[in-house]
Length: 178
Image (tube, rainbow, N blue to C red; front, side, top):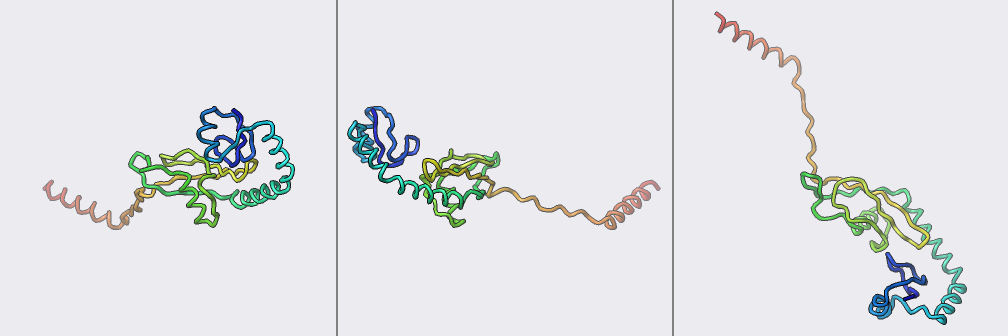
């Protein structure tokens, strides 16, 4: 069944795309929710005319998306999470966490346009931000342990203090030898 999408649906397509879906998914979800319409010949002609008229608006939208992408292109995130002794996180690091970290840096990005797998271990990963169907940015995400034990610096005793200990043991050895 061919459907014309009325909005972006991650994993399926973008607004005004014609996609093939199973009949039940189209009839029972996409059409009743207003997310798509049946791609009849007349609907395809209307879509083509609308796209022709909106070409300059779509170019402006793409330019705005490109500017947002350029703003965050050099960003690398470090997210701290509570971790067990084996390096597994308590819970997952998700797109919502990435969006929150980006907001702290001054980039207000919706978590729904961030695509990544849930992170359950400490390490380096990637998150993809889809601003437009032709504009996306890959952001490196590093997950570090929040509760990692910090190694305390070990202070070595000065050599002057070690010498009397050696002399004392020699004195004790001499007394036991007599």
